[in-house]
Length: 147
Image (cartoon, rainbow, N blue to C red; front, top):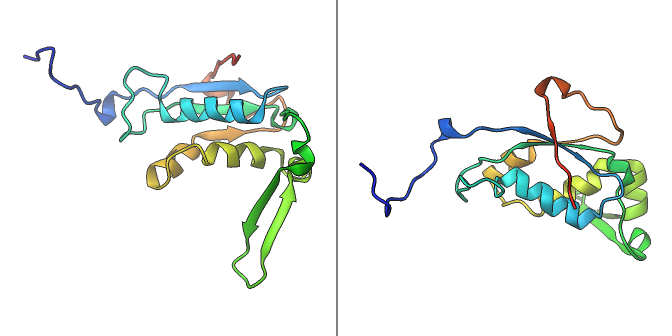
C-alpha cells in the first residue's frame, strides 16, 4: 500500500502519446519553438519526468508563414561547419526561410531540447510542413491553439 510520501515513477507502458497539430501562421519563432519543445518533452502533462520521454507527437503546418520581429530577417545569421578547412558557411533568416521553411523552426526547437539520445528521440516526433496539408490525418491530431 502506498502512502502519501511515496514517489510514483511512470512506467514506459503507462505513457500515452497523443498527436497535436499546431498552426504556425503569424506566430513568433521563439515563442512557438518554446511551446513546441514543451509539448515534445511532456512538460504539459502531470506525469512529466525529466529522465523519460513522455511527450506528444507534434505536427506543425504553415511553417513558411512564421514571423520574427524587427530587422532579424536580415541580421539573424545561421552558421554551420562543413568539416573542411575554411568550411564555415552561413545564411541569414530570410534566405534560410526561402530555401527550406521548416529548417529554421526545427533548429530553434532542437536547441531547446536536451542534448543526447533522448533529445534526438524527441526531435523525431516533430513533423513540419510548409503548407496547410499534412499526411498524418489518420492519427487524428488534436488542434492546439497557442496564445
